[in-house]
Amino acid sequence: MIHLQGATLLTPEVEYRDGVLCMEGDRIIYAGPAAGAPPPSPGDEIHDLPGRAIIPGFVNAHTHLAMQLLRGIADDVALQPWLTEHIWPVEDRMGEEDVLAGTRLALLEAVASGVTAVNDMYMSMDRVAEAIVESGIRGVITQGLIGNADPERRRLKVGTDLYERWQGAHGGRIQVALGPHAPYTCSHEYLVEVAERAKALDARIHIHLAETPEETQELAAQGRTPAHVLLDSHLSDQPVIAAHYVAPAESDYALLSGMRIGVAHCPISNLKLGCGFAPVARLRAHGIPVGLGSDGAASANVLDPFLSMKAAAWIAKGASHDAAQLPAPTVLRMATYEGALALGLADVGQLRQGFQADVVVVDLRSAQLQPVFDVASALVYTATSRDVERVYASGRLLYQGGRHLAVDAAEIIAQARRGAERIAQRTLSS
Image 1: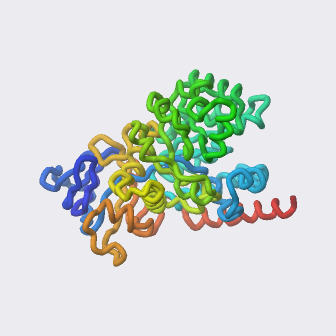
Image 2: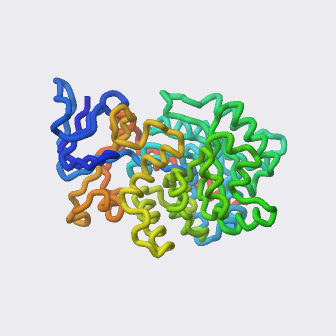
Image 3: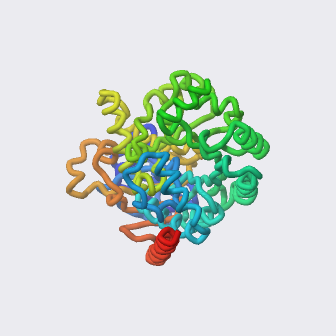
C-alpha cells in the first residue's frame, strides 16, 4: 500500500489540512483525515508531504494529441481558414509514424501537467491507443469521421473496427467512441449512419458542436439548432461528448438537459481562434456536466490544465460581468470529476474510496504561491504545471520531481523532432 500523508487533501466533501490518501493496486483505499487512516504495514510506501496538495488527476475532456507536431504552424487565423487552408492540407501528409510521435510528445506534456485521462479524436488511432497505454494513463479514443470525405464509408468502418479492437482494453484504461467530426463536415445522412452504428455497438459519440456563432447561424437558416442536429440524427440516443459548444441556440438548453450529454469546454482554443465564450454557467445550471479540454496544440499551443482552469474562470467572470461565476472549487471540479462524468468514466476524478488511484501531488511551497489562504483558489488562480510534483495513474507513479518514470522522455522528444522535420519537408515540397 502507498500512503501519502501530511498534505492538504481535497475530497468532494471537505478539505483536510492534515490528510492521508492510501492506494493499493489501482484503487484508492482511503482518503480523509489522519485520525481515521489505516495504519501502515511492513513494506508499505510512506511519503510525508507537508506543504503539498493532493488532488484528483486532471481529465482533458477534448484534445487532438498528435497535433503536438503542428504547434505554431498556423497561429492568428480564424477557425475555418485555419482548418481548410493550413491544418487539413498538412494532416493529409502525416503518416502513422508522425501521429505516434506527436501523440507521445503530447502525453509527455500532459502527464507532467497532472493529466491522467484524455479524450482524443484524430486519425491512425491504433497508434494513439498504443501511446496512451505506454504512457500509463487512461483515454477515450475516437477516429475522426469527416463524412464529406467518406462517400464509401471506409472511415466509418475504421472507427467501428477501432471500437471492436480497443474498447475496454488494458483493464478498461482504453475506451472508444465514434466521432463524427462536426455538422459542417458530416451530412445528416452520414450522422444517421453513425448513430445507427453507435447504437449497435453501444458506443459513446464524440462530436464538435456549435464551435462558432456562425455555425449556429447557418443551422438556424436551415431551421435547426445544434441540439436538433443531435436529436434529428438520433446521435442523442447514445451518450454524447459535445466539444466546444460555444454558441447554443436559446432553445438548446432545455433540449440538452434531457440528453445524456457532457460538454468539453476548451477556453484557450476558443479564445485563440476567436470563436467566442461558451455559456458554461448556464449549461451547468441545466444539469449538464462540463469538463475542460485543451483542444490540440495546433490551436491552443498548450495542454496545461492549470492554464485551462484560469482561462475558464476568467472568461466566465468577464463575459458575464459577474465575479461570482465559476468559483475556484467549481472550476477544479470541472477539470477533474465533471470531465470524467462527461466521458462516462464513473470511478475517476475524485479522491474517494474505491475510485481509480489517479492522483496528483502539487507543491504549494514556492514563493509565487505564498501565502496560501485557500488551497482551491491557489490551485486554480496561481499554480502552474511547474508546481506538479508527483503523478500517479491507476496507482502507478508516472512522474516525480520533473522526471518521467514510465517512458524515455529524451527519445520521445528526439522522435518528435524528426517527425516535425518530415512534416516541414513535405510542406515545403508540396
